[in-house]
Image (cartoon, rainbow, N blue to C red; front, side, top):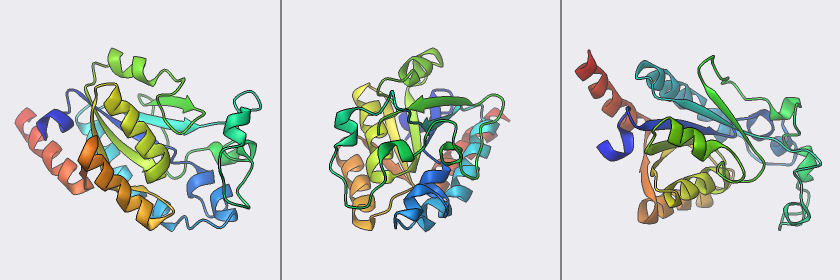
Length: 209
């Protein structure tokens, strides 16, 4: 567990905790998705942020945004269920829907904009992590089986130790949510609960103290 959670080498990644994905008035809820799971993870996300701050673990907010210049034909034509929103309707740049939900970056936090599922695709995230000398990622957010898993997979493929936090990430389809953790544990990293991470960090804080 030390390799994955060492606060000196770890960053906390918050993926897409935004109004369109989490708020009851956001696009996902309007299109029939149950967002209560996304709302329920906020207390655990806040706990992780609080403890990360205590140990000077970098906190990185990933923010999905879209403009007419980021929506390609392939992105628009990906398989979607009937009734799903057009890509430009979801997290349109500078819109309320793209704003963070319940949590917000503080002065020393980092915000990385992305335009695809993975936070590593065509972003500066990898460069930031290398400059921070991070070797491990703790990944939280929405949706577990899409953007969270895509980010975790790419992080592993870039040689980071990856941990996905089970009760600080949320999906809209229960079986896919659970399948992600099985897939992560079988192939890409760890899937832990918030209290497991905080318990480890508290021990490290006591050593520092």
